[in-house]
Image (cartoon, rainbow, N blue to C red; front, side, top):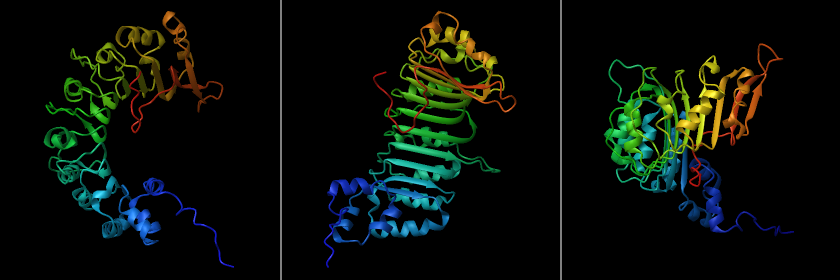
Length: 353
């Protein structure tokens, strides 16, 4: 008897099939669906592609198969987790204004500079993520900060989100370029300095959410600059002075704040009484505060967040973990009010808060 069971997949609309296809990377999309029939092939030529490069053995295979059938202008997302710079440069040089997201890791300052030069000058890139690796060199290595914000700043005027994981702590230079579309910024390993604060003030007028892992000198004196555009701040500092007024004075309009406390004795950083004074004086509009203690904090710390008029109006939540030393004395992992919050790279900031 002839099988009359309908093909449920091909009964779907073109619009729905295109949406399904965009969940697959270009290589798997080609392997699974190319050549099934004329309709599928036609749809494949209209899908926005995600090119994912991970395995070094697949570099040439991916390049050949993607370019043999697809149009390079279909590439929407390019993600490369490989030290092989040549394959990234080939793909980047073929893209056009349809490229919205570029993620690359295992690159150093030299290779980032080379890749950026391959990017179309009239691109419409919205999302850029770079994870550097440390490379020893007897000659100076170009700074990725300089490459993006000074040397090739004109190529990144459309950026909405930017994440930089630098290989080593870097000073911010004086930057004149402005990035009007940038709304979410994450920087790992930089020095908190006057030039960095000036960069945030001058070059990112519409920035809403900032995540930064930084080092601050004890004698740092904050400039009299107010970063009123920033509503969300997620910080991790390697120095023990991050909670003093020299830091918070620059963020009068904060609504959400997360602080990762990485010191061996979190109580030496800031207790509940000190936090209450700082919030009331410098960030009075704060709606959510999250304090995360990487190494755990003594349970006694919680008591300082229950004393005083300020804390009587807040619903304090505490997350505890078991101590490796004594099971009878759990350690505090997090203290927060509002709701537990952290920087979310891919989601849009809440404009209503």
